[in-house]
Image 1: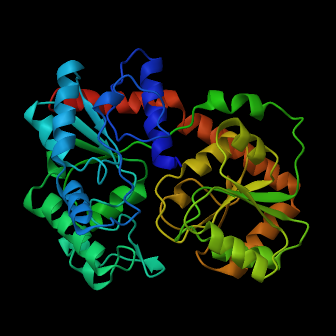
Image 2: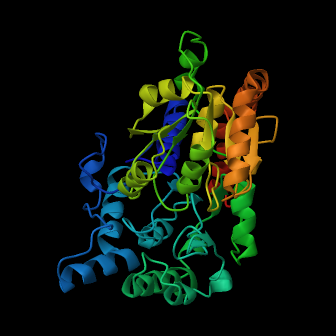
Length: 403
């Protein structure tokens, strides 16, 4: 299932190709991949969420994560066939491994990397442990990931995560060979600097392809219901259990729609059934027009995250459709959701505060419409494809000219 980082990856490629640039893709093979001219060079598929069945397979998986030689060879062959001017990296960590940075450096190809999480300073990516934000690994103290068993509660996986961080960041300094890092939010940039990251980071927020939402925006025939919608991954740290508790406190007439899939889906469905929360409805995974139509029919979008969000695509897409957002005051969310301007914010994990903000937003249709219109203008002005392209070109030119 594609998430926000994958959306940014494809959106960026589309924005570049639309303006005459040629994109050469390098990734991992997968049954659900889109057809691609360069797919013969993609590295072999692996599901890192499944444990290996033998000691040998587990060792191979660990070696792949730490330094993947196949990825280096395949990328080298790809570049020989398809010469490139600049490399734009995204989530290369495990499936490809940062070993490919050495290949690019050896070939004198400038590199920029968009950061989608906190992997540069946190072996677990999320700065979130035991249900709360965590900065125990600040300053390169990655051994704390072992003490706290950050990798799915497993000592072995946590040791691997810590070793990976020490190898890539401290011993080989692979990421320090990247020319520029792009952060979609000020929060992520400041948090990385606070925790000891030294390379230059430039803030370029994510963007929305407004052509995808313009038709729905102007379609006033869609029937709206008194409802709020969450769309995204169903996983720990997203604050969904807090949302469910709040849903039980508000009127049953307010429908809470859950769109998405993830490791917590069955647990969440069981929770709704056991606690008899009658106004929650699971709609499964949606994307594209189907997803946008469901958002359009809703009164507002909600993002109750408890961990540090970056620059959530879900908020930008909601804004593009003229929907206000109720979001937690955590991470990069307050950079987008301005109280009484583009939505309402609440204290993370606070059920009472969240349920009250839902009541306030849904009880005043004129304020809700005003905030939705403000949100739409905000995203059109600051998060358009053209503005993103111009900012990105500035960084590309700096990297290409060694500036």
